[in-house]
Amino acid sequence: MNESLISVRYAKALFQLAIEKEISKAVFSDLKLIHDAFESSVDLRQFMMSPVFKTSLKKSIVIDLFGLKVNPVVIGFFNLIIDNGREIFLQRIIHSYNNFYYEHSNIKQVTLISATSQTRESLKEIKEKIAAQMSSGIELKAKTDKSLLGGFKLIIDGKLIDASFSGKLKKLKKQLLS
View 1 (cartoon, rainbow, N blue to C red):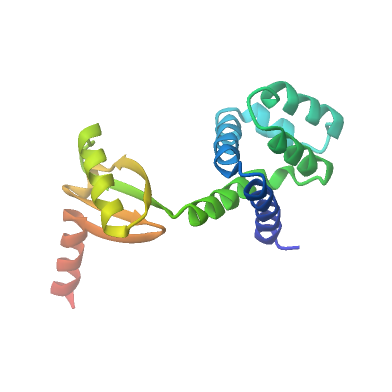
View 2 (cartoon, rainbow, N blue to C red; view 1 turned 135 degrees about the horizontal axis):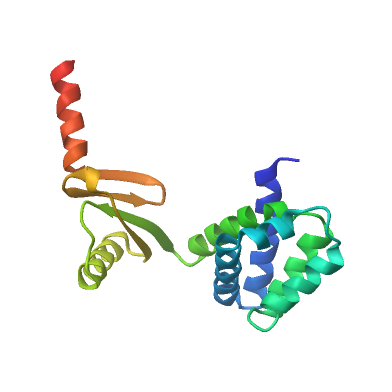
């Protein structure tokens, strides 16, 4: 079966359950906590992905690590993933759940890439302007890339808006060479 299809099916099932129980935001937060734990610990990732360890041990570790920190629905879901041998799909499942959550909650994912770092105030102002323009909630991530020379790039739900100096120079070079 297609890996992305597996991830989407599990995520959709969890999302539908979370909507039914009116805990979709709590599950979203819990999955972020789990995702961050997996991202920060190579040992945890390797342990969970290894077929050598028994499912009972994996479940025990999950309960020890997250049992008091996350909703019991998330623990039950995690146990289901382990029982079905789908641990390798966990990060994709979390990503798919997040997409369902963002769509349902009308939240746009926006990445701002600028040549210089932005202040909290400027990020707040940018976020408010984009939210007003798009009539939706915004999850804003800011990155710095000095190669832009100036200006910025915005990525909104995967679509790029390039207002950087380096982007304008590339367009100009292309026009001059053609």
